[in-house]
Length: 426
Image (tube, rainbow, N blue to C red):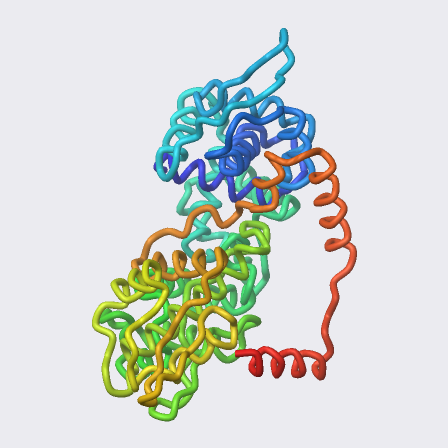
């Protein structure tokens, strides 16, 4: 495994485990916590260590007793500088690099210094294999060449610690990585039991290269992005669209009817902060609107969706046209953009300029380009709290506790009233 991938898997496992602890895993959670802390302090000025420790333990899931160890690990790699009074850390100066260098530096440390044992190495291999698609447990054990007892022990630990899922379908044990397959898990597991992991993996690989491809176009052409797909792969997509817990985005237009747009699974709740999840789902709506104009246009087709999204990111508007109002209606409803009607009857799409909408556009651009969406687990409140006061952090912790205790669900009538208010305010 590539060392950057190893670090990413450590982070996924730690996020899923949360504060759970197990004696068989030591290096993996340590590296996962190091990634989590590095992502949240990257780019910040000199920080009081007492505040770092409070935020880390209260808001981003690092146990209090582990914060100092993880901070010193980052110092050893060269990602922070420590100001100490004797052996006590007083302040932390982040020097964390951006982009791939972060994972490369941590990966080099893990490979050369951490010395993960055979059990942790096998755990990483299992989680990595399951990131691509769910797998039949017997087939995966055979493919890894692992001793069955050790393999079963790893699976048992993974399910207890929440970084693996196991379901029984068609008399087979199907294993899944919940980072990618929490939503619609039953459908994925049943498809693997029926047709094998390759069907699921091939479908998701094609979707990753062509995010937001319309289901009706896949059915009509038997292709995703120019590559042929099998009857079983189309059946999987139809099941996800019709029976899945989370419906794919859809757009209704007078010229093309109702169109559903297919994406790879949304990251699991443990691996994406609540704010980023909303931004991610808005990004799916943006990509769907652009794919509608590219693949199911009214009069004028979008020739380069990546270039159009880049223009939206930089200019926050598109040129006026008589053609595209219907395809962007969901963006208006979601308060991502507004359609200004001009005197000649044409419309102009203008993005509502907020940091959240800019972030959704950034994610949408990466999705269309087939790029990896990084940093979805960063909690912006936690980043802000690192440079705040202790009272501010304590207020955030109190708010977090209240959110975890109570979930408010609006009645159907109230939801309809709210939707009407939003529409009237446009």
